[in-house]
Amino acid sequence: MENQKQRIYDELKKMNIKYEVVEHEPVYTMEDMDRLGLPEKGILCKNLFLRDAKGKRHFLVTCAEKKKVDLKSLARQVGVNALSFASEERLEKYLKLKQGSVTPFGLINDEDHAVEFFIDKDLTRAKSLGIHPLENTATVFLSYKDLDKFLWEYDIEPIDIKL
Image 1 (spheres, rainbow, N blue to C red):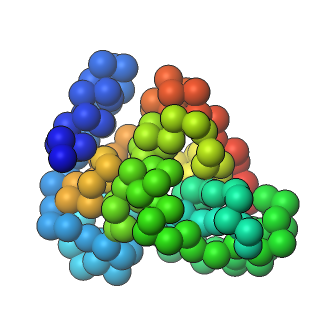
Image 2 (cartoon, rainbow, N blue to C red):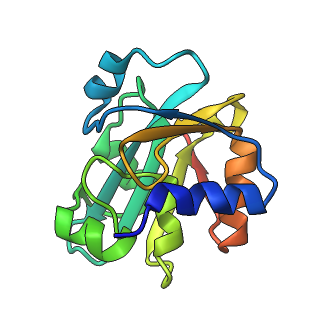
C-alpha cells in the first residue's frame, strides 16, 4: 500500500495549508493517544464512523476527544431511528481506512459521497485540531478553517452539529 500519510502531506502542501505533524507509534483508541503525551498543539479529535439501523446511511462524526457522544440523541439530530458503529468492512469499503485510522481526511476516498460528515460546532472555533493523516502513526495539527478548505477541494461539506 502506498504511503497514505505522504498523500495527505502532499495535498496539504499543494493547497498551501499550514500544518504540523507529530509522528508516533500506532494508536487505536483515544486512551492510546492520551498515553502518548502529545504536546499541547491543539484539540485532539475523536472520529466515529457510524451507520443507521438499516445500514443504508453512513456517518463520520468528529468531536473533541473528551466530548461524550449520546448516540440516541445524535440519531434524532441526523434523522434516523438508531445509530451504531459501522463494521471494519464498511470502514474499508467507504473510506478505505483501517480501524484506529478514522479521520476526516478519509472522506477523500469516498468518491460517491456516500458518507455524511458531521463536526461538532465547538470544533469550528478551535485554534488547532489534531487528526490522523489516513494512518494512525501520526497526528496532523491544522486549523478548522484549513481542514474546511481541504475538504472543500474534494467537494465535501461538513455539517455543524451540537453534541
